[in-house]
Amino acid sequence: MDVNLRKDRMTKNERWVALLNRRPLDRVPVCGFTGGFSLVHTGLSIADFYNEPRKSYESQMRVAEKFGFQEIPRIAYAGFGGWEFGGEIKWPSGDFAQAPMILKYRVQKADDISGLSMPDIKTAGIIPNIMQICRLVDESGSPYIWGLICGPFTIAGNICGMNTLARWLIRNPEAALRLMTLATEFMIDLAQYYADSFGAPRVILDIGDPSTSNQVISPKQFENFVLPYATKLADRVLGTGIKHIFLHACGEQNANLPLWSTVPLGNPGIVSVGHEVDLDIASKYFPGHVIMGNIEPALIQTGTPDRIYEAARVCIIKGRKHLGGFILSPGCELPPLAPEPNVWAIMQAVSDYGWYE
Image (cartoon, rainbow, N blue to C red):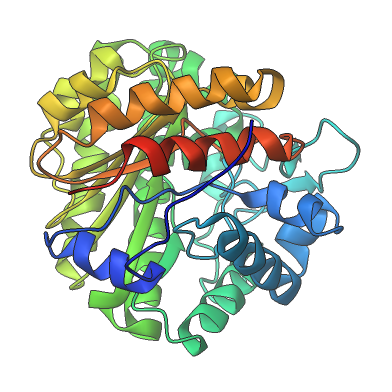
């Protein structure tokens, strides 16, 4: 596929400010969730994304500039919380490892919960590296900082293992709720740390909660165990002065959307959905927020440029109708080994169908 892109009329920073202040844009913004892709694309290892904040920042910036992405460099991964609460992790290595993996959970049985203490926000696990990359973004003059906290249910599952947490929802709900409470308080403290460090209005706070997928729990379990804590966390985050919550509701979340839609996400929030959720449905439930998505990541890895172009076109046609604002992206992280022609196909679709005239 030959690439012939229209020239942007706005910078990345101008587009962010316009999007989050409900002003007109030149074109549909594209966030790649580039993560490991940036590092591989610039000749570094995926582990460097998490261990080398300056290298990670520079590679993400280079890839964003090359492809025209809206990326704000950040460190994020679904296993967050496991290491921070005292578990052990393994850094990604080899062709098929995309993120740190939890090797040993801090909580093995319910009695272990009583021995848990709240992590030191400034030193726990990967947080110092996250904050270092945020400082580099701050020094660059970016209008916004992207901070990771994750959702309480995902954090709780990373402390004890998702299989264990899912069993406890049925057999030992008290243990599950104790972990959820700890996870929520930890995330509230971390949100305040971002607000204090960079100024609350500049922070976009990433509450990824992939473990709440209906592939893991039922809508009723979501309502009883997830919703109260997600709502409390969001309320407290917005209480710090942070204005924009980024909710990454990954996986099969269709039955949860009516409940997610009651959680306050700011003005506006950003709602990212996986390829399992139709963008028209997401638009219905989140009319006042920016929606983001949702090209299937596996397709970007294995499909042809023509197929990726068509998938991106369909997302653009649906998403650009959404009055709250739209960001085109993969349904989750861009595969680290995605072929470059497939990535350019996304940008060609934006050039052909994503301009606001």
